Length: 322
Ligand SMILES: [Zn+2]
Image 1: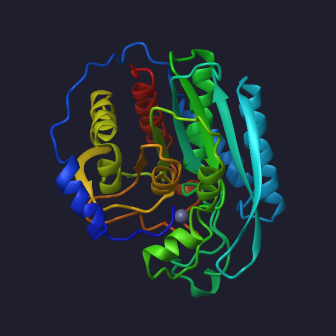
Image 2: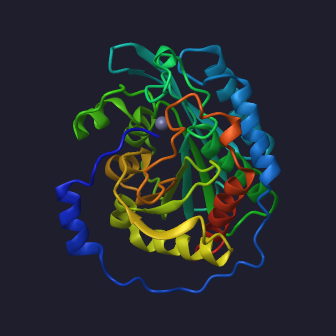
């Protein structure tokens, strides 16, 4: 997850003028969903962390990309990878890999699930100033979203939904500078994989909606309603939170509205034109957990039950697409 900013005045204006309306309630069925396996998802975090930090231009990064691709292929999905070069803020060329995998590629009616799989090259918020220049393990930031999508791909492939599902693993989300001063900085230096993909996506690819998961595995996580998501597709946000609460995860999916965050979903909305929302840890009044962009973002903070709560909720949304 990259830097965040307070909601922009422009979006605030449109939000209040266009989106703060009642949302129709549509029924859903939650009793015949596939079972998202918490232990399996957790094992995918372990596998990623075992490679070490997944920083571009490193062997760990290459190995992890291969691992993700091979897992998706083993579930019978149609996998394609997109390799590209993007410049870091200090002009370092970075070799990026976006991984795209389709379940039931023959269907026109589709939804898009996405996350970022790269991890941060520095730990600028770490309390130990001597270790701030070292890359983080990113068990939660990079690892958790990837693990949830891999587990979703596994269980969905065994009991395919009525809608086609695309899984997209973006690279180069988290390689921006330690100091970010403006929205322009975000657009230039963060979410580079999402930006590349959005600009090169196939013509005619128009999923019904997109859903990003990021920072979805930390113990004690709370998922509050992120303002940009509400602006871009409030109906889906409302439905996700209803489903999460109906599944018994009401302590995680809280009725609290939090400020807009810049992440890949903003780019997918703005550049690819796919209405998309995000499930991301955003603890009311606290923002992210204190592990964020520090060396504490390791396996010790991961709670398999949080991965499960998010994964099962996403299943509820996908298997109820009309
Ligand atoms: Zn991050």
